[in-house]
Amino acid sequence: MDKILDIMNGWLTTAVSSGTFEIKQVLLFLFIAGPLALVIWKIRGIIAFVNEVRNSKLNEFQHILNGFELSDEIRLCIKEDMERITAYRVTGISDVARQKIILRLVVQNLDLISVGFFKKFRTFLVIKDRRLIFKKGFSFWFETGMYFLFSLQFLLLAILALILFTYRYEQISVWGHIALCTGSVVMFLFFIAFERMIPRPEECKLLERVLQSQCNEDSD
Image 1 (tube, rainbow, N blue to C red):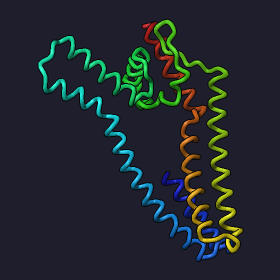
Image 2 (image 1 turned 60 degrees about the horizontal axis):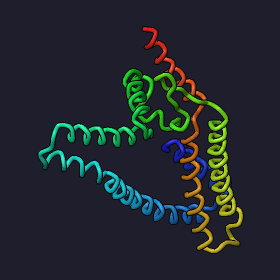
Image 3 (image 1 turned 45 degrees about the vertical axis):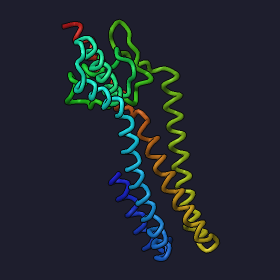
Image 4 (image 1 turned 90 degrees about the vertical axis):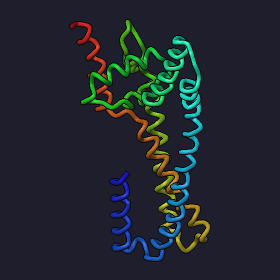
């Protein structure tokens, strides 16, 4: 994100020096971007509240463990359910069987991957012969292609809004400028979100390397 902001800053500076942007256009952009940044900051507070609601089940389980006399069987079931919920949060995988394999692989390859590495591939990881397999078929290429098209679409919409803001400055009202700048920022954020969902070739190679370690483990 910092690199993107540096690029935007350099682009604005170049545009002003070359005469593409006038100073008043840049000031208007900053006037709009400031309150928008404040809104985004407030959204973070809303997200924190949503996360607190999401954690309510874990908090309830912890309260039950701490406040009630329970049999060992019930305690074990509650702890297993808490572990399943937590594993889903960090791996993006819902079923327990894949969670356990992924967590074992993460521990074995901590120098290569993080615990959230498998989230991009959760739809394409299946269990076969008690091993995790990367199913790289039509569905993989289709989903990846859709993410790419969506990210490209939002990027083009963001650029189009900036072009209209720049070259139709005199013909657009103040509210029109506000809508264009707001729309450009929102579209750019969507572009970043979808772009991060696309598995890169080097990530696919790393995944195959990590999964290959299962075969090496069996041979040992």
